[in-house]
Structure formats: C-alpha cells, structure tokens
Length: 248
Ligand code: PXP
Image (cartoon, rainbow, N blue to C red):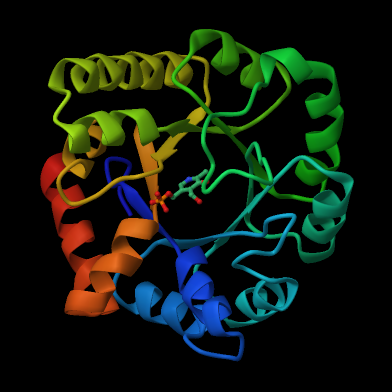
C-alpha cells in the first residue's frame, strides 16, 4: 500500500442486525467479514454496543480468530468495553459516543468536555499496543482535545455531510464538506492520522476520498444494504473502485 492509497474499513455490524432480527446463526458477520476481506477491504470494523443490539461478544471472539486484516473495534468509553478491548488487543480501538436510545452513532465524541477522563481511559489501550482512534465532529476544539489526550488517530464524522447530500440540501452539504476538508488538513498538521466515516454511499464517498490527508474510510450500512442487490463482493469492489478513482 502506497502513502497515497486510501484504506477501506468495512463495518459488518448490520449483518449481525439481520441475524439478530430472528436470533440464530445466520447471516454470519464473520463470513461477511472474510468476503469483504477477499473483495479488497483493508480492515474490518465492528461496534460492540452496550446493549449488544448487533455485534455480540462471541462475534468479537470469532473475528479476532478469523481475520487476516486488522480489526477496528468500536466501543464506548466504559470500563466494561475497556476490559474487553484489553483482553483482545485488537489492532485499533475507535472510541465513539453511545446513547442507548439512538439508532446509530449520532454525533462525535465530546472530547473537550471529558479530556481528563478520556486521557486516563485510553492510556492502557495505547500501552497494550492498540491504535486509539477518536470519533469526532469536524471541529477544531475536539481535534485539539483528541491530540492532547494522546490519540494517534481521529475519525471525522461524515454523517451530516451525507444526510445533507441525500436531502438535496447542497449548500449545507458543501459547507460540511469544507469543514471536513479543513479539519482533515488541520488534524494532519498536528501529526494525527485522519480517518472518516458514517453514512457514506457510492454517491457521497468521492469528495471525502479525495482529501489527501484522509488515510481510511469506514463504511458499513450502505454496503450491507447494497449487498442485498448485487452481493457483498461486488458491493465492496465498487466502493474500492470509486475510492481509488477519487484518489487517482
Ligand atoms: N465510523 C464510525 C465511528 C461508526 O460509528 C460507524 C457506524 O457504526 C461507521 C463509521 C460506519 O457508518 P455507516 O454504517 O453509516 O457506513
């Protein structure tokens, strides 16, 4: 992988959502992860939520066992999750805000407000060799705080940009995109590795993929939905193609 190449992390949470709709064993998120790997994913992302609404503890055990590419373990900053992460020591840990009643991760983490607690929270994860990533809005104050607490990576929340795009609110979308662009460059200038994700689709991925400072995109819900129509392998391959074209 060259310095300019953008990594694709495929989030397989919603394979587990479909499985859990009925209980039982299928569709199997580990099988989806292996297919995504073969189709060109550079990593797999899975979010173990406090309420285990999709990914379960045994999915994490199985992913750690089965994957050949790195696992990006998404979790809230709780003692329970920290223990699980320290037991598995995944390649990366992405700290996200979590509210029980939300449908998905709605906003970025408020790092600035909880700087002290988060600095202590991530230190053992870093000591265990995990790359710690903090999921935040494109906001200078949050980036500065993520830098101060010792995170190596930030992931910028692209949800608002994607929502505006889908709703046809193009002025708002372009303003969000500009904030993402500026804050990618700013975070990179501080020495942070920059990732981005949430809500990205074939339609919205390329402007973000074109930011030279962004090293990784994490994409899930759209790809799993698209897999219903064209299969997971072509769905991932098409995302990979669009990302590489935007980069080229
Ligand atoms: N990045 C983070 C930190 C997330 O929480 C999520 C959603 O779980 C994603 C990326 C992927 O978002 P989506 O499933 O909308 O592509």
